[in-house]
Image (cartoon, rainbow, N blue to C red; front, top):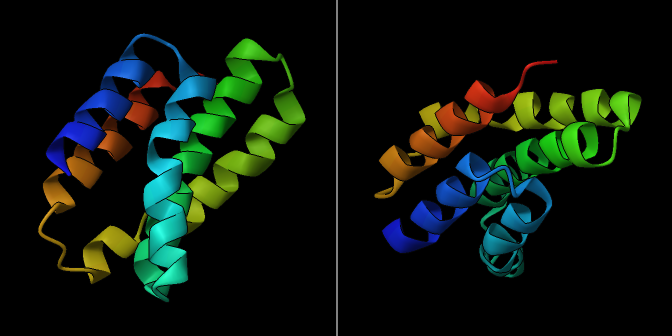
Length: 103
């Protein structure tokens, strides 16, 4: 799991926002399929954070970026509810995404 999040975070730091969300998508789909609803929503929120950055910085689509950012904010609180062994990577991803948001 650490490697997956390291790749994601590196891509965010390299401003490859659109491509970065693809890194976590297989995990999100797996969690959805396994009915791990809260964990899937948390990963969905992180993915949406990257999508929001992509919409704003890569596509210049301001309103959709702001709308998707709200989904990010809606689900990231779940990290406090879930005691996942990879929480520290999730927190690092959330922090990195927030650092890149300048809108």
